[in-house]
Length: 224
Length: 241
Image 1: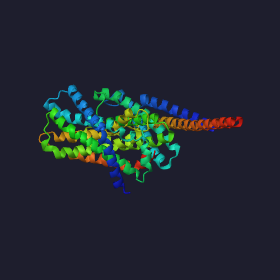
Image 2: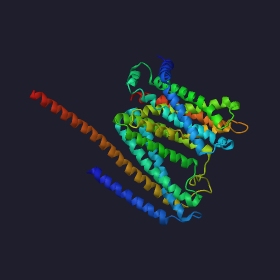
Image 3: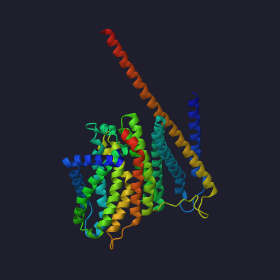
Image 4: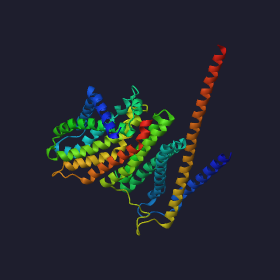
């Protein structure tokens, strides 16, 4: 079976699993909302200030929520040893990994679909004019988050205290992604909005580097 | 016995080197024109940075070698490099702010090199934490090697992102062109300090590697003893019935 087809089948399996309960999605959205609201108590969210802090706040909320949401991605395969079954299936390990990455990308994007409008309302930002460019930045940033996060969730699934371990592994690694995503988002909120291409290219580079590394290392990752 | 003599000899040589390097940095090296005494910390700051990056690079190579060969010795080198690197990195992160406070007027700044080193430190501490939290030896070696490779790939990205963002660290003075550079005596003292620093690094690295090997061998032997003991018990029970 081709990798793409196998990944698509695994993706539907992940989606079906999630949409039966929608536990993960609702928890992620609520968690990110809590972070956004708590931040607004820490900083005064008046309009001028929010333009400065807003993008950073938004991405911090995404990264924190993501580092919690990605935990069950592999850990939940352990309850019934279903990862062994996946390994025995005649599919490549990259299909398993990329199926999960795609599923996580969809979950994270759905969460962002709820969070970005709420954030824009709470912080009084008008995003209508820059929507297409904002989606590009969000997609690239979320891509980097789920690529590295899915790999690390496979690593931390075998460890003790895995819920605590995943953010510890993931968040320092995402420091460059955070800088680039925040700067790119901030460049969209200036007057007039001017998307900073350097940071968009940087985000794309981040995704490519780690996607390639995941592809090269996935055999070792899934086999263990 | 031979290895013991070698270790003692190595330790004595490195100890002599580091004492002499310390003396040279404090008393032989000439006074710096604008920074005066505080500049002398540089003789330890730069070597700590160099050894730190060398150790992390060794870990990266060992991680790749482990995944391709599956020989446990590469895992031992990986953990040895990461631990020694974190130690050297800590020295660099402490001596840096001590120097920066009088010279820049601030303890810390979010400059490209400082931030990169700090993130690097966090990443390798995470690497060591991860190793502590994984139980089974082979799985521990494989998964931590994967994380190590990801962590090292992140270093140029952290550096680039901060470089694009802001930077304040002094530019390289040694190879920086005609008017930059160190006085000849300073250069010699620096060279001595770098050699002494690498001596210390190699010494600890070798010891840490040996410790990891002993731990591995001990675990193997214990496993062997336990399985033999349970075999013997089984045979005895069988003989009785």
